[in-house]
Image 1 (spheres, chains in turn orange, blue):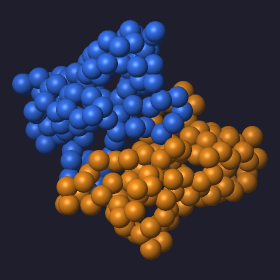
Image 2 (cartoon, each protein chain N blue to C red):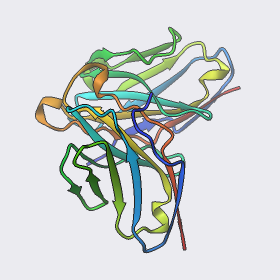
Image 3 (spheres, chains in turn brown, red):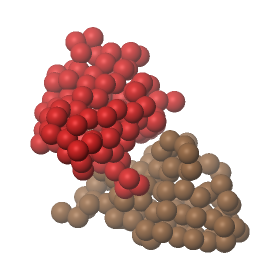
Image 4 (tube, helix red, strand yellow):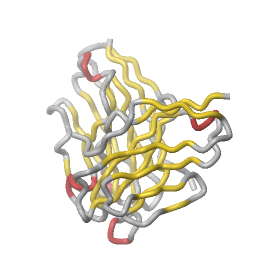
Length: 116
Length: 114
């Protein structure tokens, strides 16, 4: 069974440009999470989808970040316009339905974003 | 903020058991103890979790004290590939909203030496 995949693995963009990160969760996982680590800081939660609905977006830093999960499958995280402080590694994680008993989050390899 | 306290770093000899402690004195009755690790800059890797009983899987063992205020992750025979940052996280299991999200602290950097 394939794990969580993320694309691209690296992205280098200029300040003011737009970048879209993609996450494909483990097949059948209803829950999808985005986290990020910026330089020198801990990994921080951004938001949580249950299927196609945003369950919790309390960690989103500002309105330059837009996450979507159309159809409840893969998710995208768009940063527009990108700022220097957005540089970091963006992780995606997924877990099964909590009521079904599979609540452990499994992480993807991350996307390293560099804003110049 | 993270609800756990871990030593910033530890060393372990290859082939020996690595015992990583974690304090979580404010843990609630419905919170589980989770352990993840991050090797280099890879994504965090799930290791094990437990509520109050000791747990063992193919990767590690988790020992939780009776009062649940602390726990120890044991890697029985550490290898060089176990060098990583280990995170101890407490979280509510099976609930929606922000209670189930993982709150990472600084973790313990384990260095396994030959």
